[in-house]
Each structure stands twice: as structure tokens, then as C-alpha cells.
Length: 151
Image (cartoon, rainbow, N blue to C red; front, side):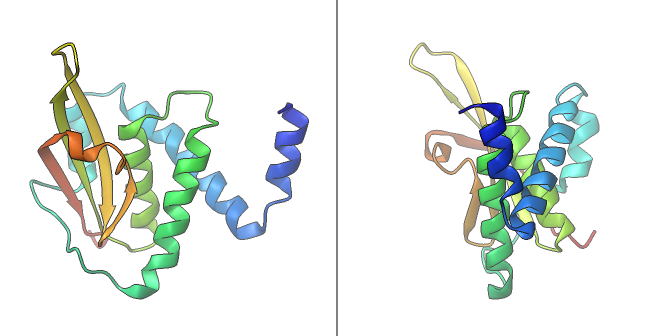
């Protein structure tokens, strides 16, 4: 698809979707820059280490959670930088935090077919997985961060 066609699609979105996409784009870029810092410096901003948020949620938050998940999923495909699992999870966490919705970021490890250690990150809010759910069952949780969004 040519750039002009893509831009036309973006500007024909309804205002709410456009703003969610714009926010996702900015936060994906910001989250990507965090990868250049030591994790020990970034970790405190992710929430309470070793804790999880409740699996119950206020039903009124469901539309926002779906919008955040959809925005992160869609926009991450079109960023000029790599927006892999950790970047998507952190950006989603911050989008939810801005809306007063708690979430838990999980970090997991596994071994690939060659025996090499691989890592994955995913984000859950209430009973819903915002990002990374497709592969999470293949990984063992090594850390988690609860962001109650009221900190």
C-alpha cells in the first residue's frame, strides 16, 4: 500500500480511534527508548515488583482496555522502530495507567529449539490480555510488575 493511501486511511479514522493510535505511536516510541537504559533504572516505573493486580475489573473499563489493546496491536506493526513484546507491554501499561486502569506486566523466559534462552513480555488487565498473549504459554514467568494506576 502506498504512503498516500495509508495516510488517507489514518485521517479518515474517527476522532477517538485516531487519538488512541496517536497516543499508542508516541508511547511505543517512548517505551522503545527505555530499552537503551539499564533495566534496574526502568523497573521502578513499571509498578510494584513481584505483585499482580486483581483479575477482576470494573466492566466500565472493558471498552478502554479493548481500544488500548487494538491500538497497540495495530500501530506496533507500522512503527519505523522495532515494537516487540516488551515495548508493546510497557506502552499498553502506560496507556491504561493514564485511564486509571491497573495492569500487570509479566516477564518470562524459555528455550528455543536450539536451546538458546529467549524472553517474552505480556500485559494483563483484569481478566483480559492486552498484549503478548499469543505466546505467553510457552514461557515461565520470572518477574511481574503490578501497576495499580493510582500510584
